[in-house]
Image 1 (cartoon, rainbow, N blue to C red):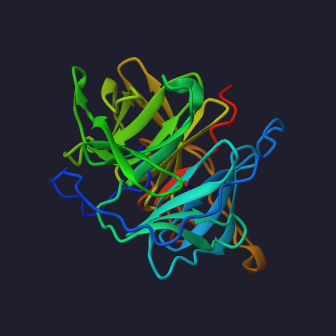
Image 2: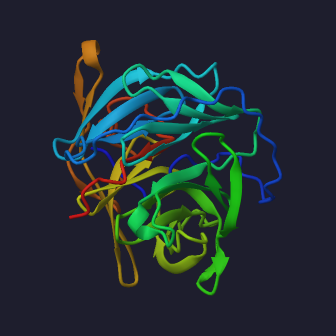
Length: 301
């Protein structure tokens, strides 16, 4: 059985307390402008998930996690993923901003030369932003930046601080088109686990704190049909439901498809409060999720 906890995607295992953002990124390769792409057709039913070395595709309807390919990113580990309305996949590595081939896992460098990049990122739907234009955003602890998809440049957008509290991002961000935007936050107490906060995507400031999850190392956050999915560093996948007074978590079973190596069953659904530490079948293999992404056109109901 697979248990799920609610922590943000692409979390920084060695997060420092310094939330300053004064890094310089050298642009080594600027990709050609993307050609116009027809986006009227429904998006692929897929949430893209990463470990530090491998790209996976999760089907939220069939609950199959398919191994796609290992990343080819000049030896750099993948930290987080993000996907726009055109279903183009981007990534943050240990020192680069990259585009990712969804079939081969190959990375094309946008900017390289920084070790102070955001680790919790996502594209925000145009309908959720005052400018009415989709943007790539990211947190490094409490600092909120806009990420330029052509140059990789970071523009300061605000901080994860305001009337609703002061927080630090722990792993990932997800925005629902025309709806709310969420980020996972550090709890700083093992018994609390990571938290889930709602933010203003225009400024990065928190607008509400939904509560703690009792689970940690939740590094991937995505949504499909209005359901929030959380991918934990221990290989578990959760379904999260923010409600008045807290966040309920449900561990969901899934099938891991390794291609030629066959498929493994990861068990059945279970309450997140269940203890699977003694269950040998709790995870079919060791998968350390580091980030998740879904197109901003993903259905929200």
